[in-house]
Image 1 (cartoon, rainbow, N blue to C red):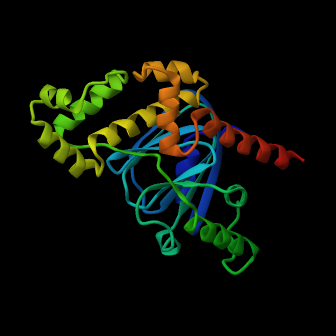
Image 2 (tube, helix red, strand yellow; image 1 turned 60 degrees about the vertical axis):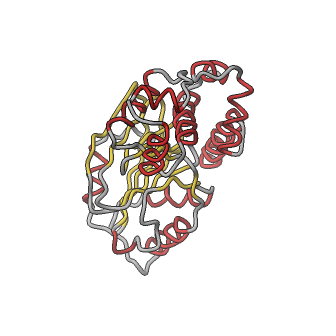
Length: 273
């Protein structure tokens, strides 16, 4: 795939079709598409690498074999680092009724991935009742039933909670208890429990764990060793970190990432044969 500049994304958004798309191959030490919104819903599918999106007061991870669905008129920004292959679709609200009404990261099957790639190659206006229209409708049908992944980190708006988030970002290894964090931000432990639950829908412990999973995924996707990431996140051993990761995402980190890389490599090999 040829290199496509980020401006191509906006060109795809402006195409007067129910669905328009663009594919990109990026190698970057850091590229961010700053906060913006558009009427059409947006699907970001990652075939290789890792994408992070700041959407609707939260962070969303988009690893390989996953896609992020962002309904229309929701402000968001997108950040990519490293060697990334992704596809961006814009879907008019008039035909997106069966898709989720809120942001979500979804698992992409082999069939759905190939449908998205095929749609991204459409360059001419299509007949809704013709072959291309039926292709797009099949893709939308598959999207509407795709399973959702737990790769979302709600970000609180309360300034005291943001201080905690900033602290965890600057020092992920900080294992302070909820009581210690409450004292640092000058509130009672009970108030902190209630506030974090109200703003994120999670307990403090669950929210901090999700924070660590998001940090870990971004670093592991660039090739860092599990042992290094575990130590930097404050775990006493790699096995303790692996146990936490497996409980949260259903697989240990090496298998989780290998399954996605393997899936992408197999599909890439199939497409060249």
